[in-house]
Length: 385
Image (cartoon, rainbow, N blue to C red; front, top):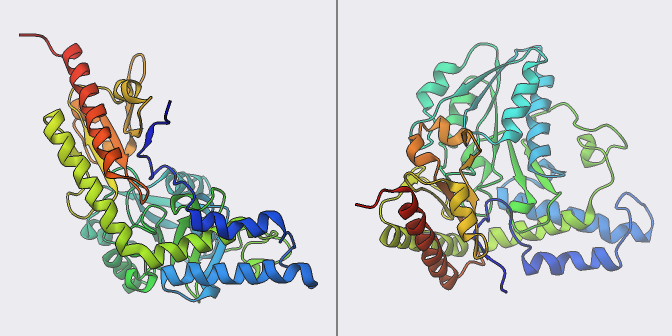
């Protein structure tokens, strides 16, 4: 039996063949510690330097502004906690949005136990933050604004450049979680105007367990990890050379082929959307119709339960749900709740996320499988005339 078609690229990505090839020497022969002064440390040290440059090219910054981490969650923790603690004497107020990833929301909630305050900005029904709301939320004691570049569930791209501009006029540090956007749309830090930016390797066709944080020169978050002083003293610990090499190569490929990959993903996403409308009848799009990641499609099927659809298609298509149905309740994602999605629709929400390896044949098969499952399930829940 063939494995299911994979359309959950926002959850994680497979390794790009070029990434695997770049990592092989550091699995087989190049085992040295990059901090070692002898011969065995030379190649690993050079490889880390190369990877830092590759990440910097994708983001349009200087290599010395890149700090390697264990992933997007650590990058977000480093940025938010680091700035909060470093600027505590100036103020204790943070601003974020209601649709952030838990790797941001939970950090803010933790800081609240330390005496910080957080304003959680609302979003409209398309998942968009209002710059007016942001400006009105700023206080004299605001020290950090953190907004995701693009939402992981519905794909809406937030107005980061405008938000960062509003922060800059008030002297407030600005961070964005770009885990979902890097490699799909431009993430040039000077165009966005951000001070800190997080990326995650496993969303970028690199391994799990590696990421990076861009820290603009002159911005000084509190140290995340104390020790021997790696990563210019910002994040101690022997470098994960194998995966850093993989992340670097992934960023090189993303930078080189960004336009081609974007066009490919958008074309297949739209083909999938049109096919599901044609074969399944009325569906509800979640997220902004235009300002949306080129690979992301969040659709709701009225009156159905996402778990039921996933169970019906699970042997043929791998996607994720926007709601979980329990024995006595339905748990809709915090993103759909913030967008005020109607419950009759929200419960039947599926997220399809295509990738650079997705084919037309896979999309067409997915249309057939999902539409057939939806029709069968509707026949069960709707009365027969």
